[in-house]
Structure formats: C-alpha cells, structure tokens
Image 1 (cartoon, rainbow, N blue to C red):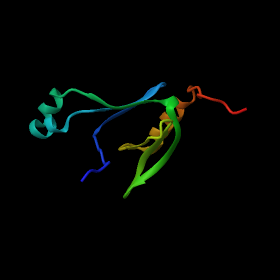
Image 2 (image 1 turned 180 degrees about the vertical axis):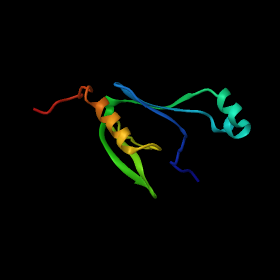
Image 3 (image 1 turned 180 degrees about the horizontal axis):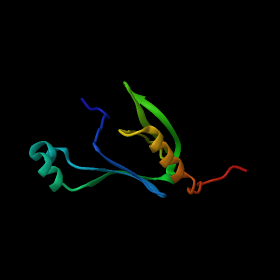
Length: 107
C-alpha cells in the first residue's frame, strides 16, 4: 500500500526569489531528545521559485484551516501546513510576490 502523504516538520522560509522548507530528521529527535535536535543537521526538503507558482490559496485538512496550497507550472500541487498565524504568513507571501516578474504577460 502506498500513500502520497508525506508530512515533515520543519521551518518554512519565504525569500524574494523562492520558498524553502528545511526539516530536521525526526529519528534523531525521538531517540536523543534535545541533544539530538541540537546535533541533527537541517536538510532542504522542499524548494521552488516564486515565479513557478500559478495559483495560491488557503485550504484545509480536517479541522486545520491553515493549509497553504500552491499550484506550480509543472502541474504539482504543494500543500504546507502553517502553525503560526495565517495573516502573518499571507502578508509575507504577498510582499514577496510583489517583486516577482511573471513568466508571460497577457496583452
């Protein structure tokens, strides 16, 4: 049995060029606690440029209504759960998207 559910705990960064999700391996944290958390290295789990985003919306998963859904040019649908306030994430995303040049223009 195979599933598409791929949950990772990490930190989401929004820059003026891309979105990056850095995760730490949960095995080290589970086995060694705080010491494992300090010794484990961050790993870039997900990364995509802002210019590849075709659609952004707020979604939900069960009772969680703070799911950021991104549709990308290559057809992928990325869903990221936000643990903080949605308004702060949305404002940071909108600010980052102001400087993004579109790949094409409609005239």
